[in-house]
Length: 363
Image (tube, rainbow, N blue to C red; front, side, top):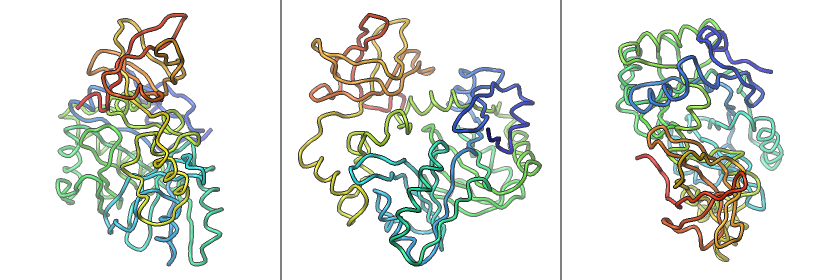
């Protein structure tokens, strides 16, 4: 089991620790998931996401390589810009979803913590086709904090001379914060205003940065946030979680990621299969679901039915703290993908109604 440099802080704050992606990570702290969720929606919260992976792609072939392995158009990026993307196998199945950062003379790919070994091995196998290329897995060197919520900018601005308000969505800069050199990024997995802080350093330096952020955010009621609230926050926005809503058995088109899949940019892994699927038409699609039954929570794996037949399965589900009702995501066959359609979730020998909804569930 691995630990991030913030692990002693999680222990001090009485976090409940779980095994996640091979790391001992906080699932929630002493005040509970609801308090953490609301802190991000209404003020500011801090996530330790140092389990995520970072791979630097360097060399003359860097652009061509990233174009080949990802579905979005990397050629559109300039230094200081990032994009959401995905990597696919030849059959269109998703290797992983990721962020691509244009760092000037290299690219940084940010991948899911549970997929680091698989992703890096897959990248290395693809790299064999390129002569002037260097892949550096720097995952264990990088500390990563996500500071999210309406007061995130006011909190962090106290600690840096960088004009954080000037950083547009899906942009980033190299700067100093709390006296430490870092990448200050604005992407986010909560749907709120927020920033990601990538920096190198040991446990002592990581603690210094953490404490500086919490001192700056004290007036706003800043809270540490665990994995449980991270999941409910992203679910309210309808953001996919790899391993649940998308994986090697799903294509970007089925998973609602057609908007990042640029089939006209030229060849890339999985392109032919994706183009064929678009031409032939989908048979299923990932949809949002709002449960229309009280005291029932939709969970991953529950079967979805309509007209007496099974039409799919729930991939993610939980209670929305903002809506106060159960929401979910799942794959359903056509024609049950239309918003407003009523389907049923089968659990405990009963069927519970749910309405197909187009995410986000919370604006």
